[in-house]
View 1 (cartoon, one colour):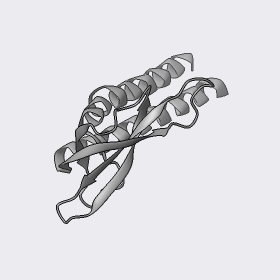
View 2 (view 1 turned 90 degrees about the vertical axis):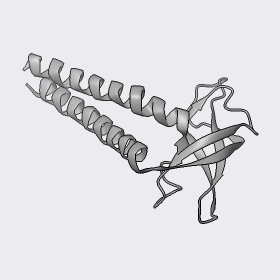
View 3 (view 1 turned 180 degrees about the vertical axis):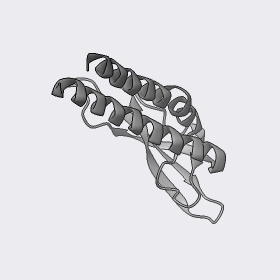
View 4 (view 1 turned 30 degrees about the vertical axis):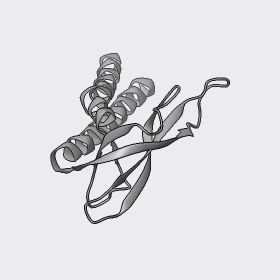
Length: 132
C-alpha cells in the first residue's frame, strides 16, 4: 500500500515541478524582453561523467538601462557554444540575472523539455494509482 502511494506522490512532484518550470518559461515568452548578446566563454558543467566534458555557454547582454549582464546557460552540451557567436537572449526585465537564456534554448525548454517532464510525472502518478 505504501509503495503505490510513494509512486503517486513522486509522480505528482515531478509533474508539479514540470508545470511550474513550464509556466515560468511561458511567462518569460509572453512578458520577457529580448536583447542581442554574445557568447563570451564556456563553463564546465558539474556532474558530467568522467572523461566527458560538458560545457555551458556563458553569455553577455546589455539591458536598455545600460546594465551589462553576464550569465551562464542552464543547459550544457559538448563542446558547448562557440565564443564570439552572436545570439538573442530572452530575460525578465525585473530580474535579468535570473532565468536569462539563449532564445533557442528557451524555446526548446518551453516546447519540448518541460512538457515532457509533465508527461513523465503524470505517467508515473497514473501508473502508481493503477497499482493501488
